[in-house]
Amino acid sequence: MPNNEGIGVLRLQCQQMHPVGRIMKETPYQQVVFDPGAQYGDRRIWPDEQDQPQFKIDCRFCNKPVGEAATSLQTKLRDLMDSMSETIKIVVLPYV
Ligand SMILES: [Zn+2]
Image (tube, rainbow, N blue to C red; front, side, top):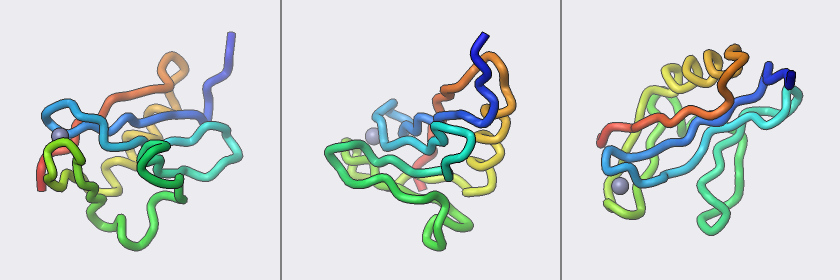
């Protein structure tokens, strides 16, 4: 059985189910990164100062910002990393 400990991907969506990026940790030794999508920019360490306390990102389809508290997203990622059965979770971010 694969050991998923320390690995997790939060797939972020707006309320219209558009993809807005991913917060992820692909290996136990890698730092958490935000991946906006290959065509939109580079991955970066997450969260940084601008992501706290509220993480915000524009949905490119709706042209509206969506977001959630960084601590809430960190908790969701930690719960996912602790899960032995799941490594990917979809998180719907409300408009802000
Ligand atoms: Zn959208």
